Image (cartoon, rainbow, N blue to C red; front, side):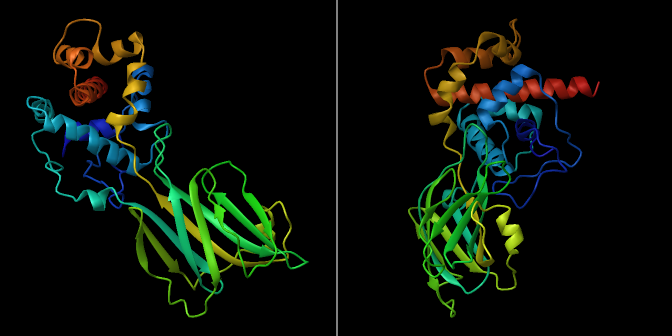
Amino acid sequence: MINHARTLLLNLSGVAANRLVDGYEYVPTTFKQITLPSGLNVIRGVLFGQQPDQRFLNLRARELLSYVHAIDGLAGYVKALDPRITYWPDNTAESVLYRRKVTVTQTAATPRTVAVSGEFAASNATGVSTNNYFVGVGATAENTGVLVTQKLGTTEPAVTTTFASTDHIPAFVLPQTQVTVRFGAPDASGLLLNSASSVGGTLVESNYAGAGSLISATEFNTLSSVPVTDVRASWALALRANPSPAIATIMPALELIGGPVLFDLFGEHTVEPYTTFKNLWYAHRLPAYRLAAFTLALIYRTEALRLKLNG
């Protein structure tokens, strides 16, 4: 298993691991996700969020393991489980792996230029780092415009905005973000599309997928609170965010974890290596040491469960 400690930390079934996701490292196809007891699930929820996507898992694990490998003496606990380490040292440039990205793909109608501004980040609470949106523009019987935006994969209702003319779409904010999107007037040449630009450290890509087709007015009206007679344009937007550094954002939440849960992690009695991990967590003054020890304790508890399940 390459590397077994990392595989245990992700606790992701090998057949589910997607090599196309940022931060991917090999997970054996034979590895099966291990069911954790409630206490360890609480800890994992703080570290990775309640429903993390694979990008969040990969990047958060990358950060946590970087502390382990940077501290003399602690990396040996990783090698004790598996000496084969393919992810360290990590030579991937930060600007590549951690690059935030907005992708705007117009799926039908005459091309329009697009501008994107604002801030967005992954959610520590949920562990979601990639959000997808549908944006559509329709026209009513009176030829006024209707803009519909919906965050996909959620039960949140779509947001409907009306405006005077479909030729001049108003700027709008994507639901549950601080990201503002502005579409220009129709431009049959499409010369400003299919270009990439960097705004505030965020890569913005705009594409035109001319082979796409508009959804029907009937389908559009299942989302819109204002009936339309026809649909004029549609877009697919994807926001790829970054987890906020664990060492700066989740340490207070870890500090609030109660004794019974920490018993599940460190054990109630003095047994190595948990004693070392426990002492570092409670007594060391540097957050990097404490977080590294906490991470190793979760890895070793997960391995103990795996061995118990396998007899």
